[in-house]
Length: 155
Ligand code: PNS
Image (cartoon, rainbow, N blue to C red):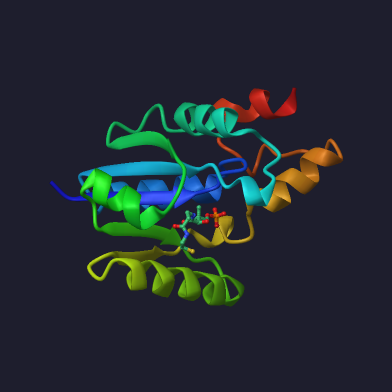
């Protein structure tokens, strides 16, 4: 049973995240999408809402479980008995942050492996922060977020 963890703040989940989840499903038997509480980021959507939105977005993905977590990812990987972390890599601008996080996790747990997946080019520009910025100005987000959560974001 190959299990991988896909961690993130998911504030909110986007089509880019969903594309990474689909790709991970082609490689692993089970994907645990782990929504971080990440209070320090002061998310737009609260912890419970972010978990609920991810759950709704992945309803048609039988290999995917969704959980919330607080604390270190390295500890979560112990609890879940999963030593593979999935992260999406869109552009060079993501690289520095991802590299630092990957090394930090590896320094905490030697056998923790991070695998980086590229989204389709059409999703490469999408980020949760772009979605939040557009939402703030009542702009259209249909092309950026999973269809099942569209109405939840608009209200
Ligand atoms: O979607 P994000 O905000 O880029 O995800 C960042 C996340 C949640 C993966 C990262 O903040 C994280 O792993 N938080 C848990 C705390 C932790 O383990 N920190 C040490 C590694 S930097």
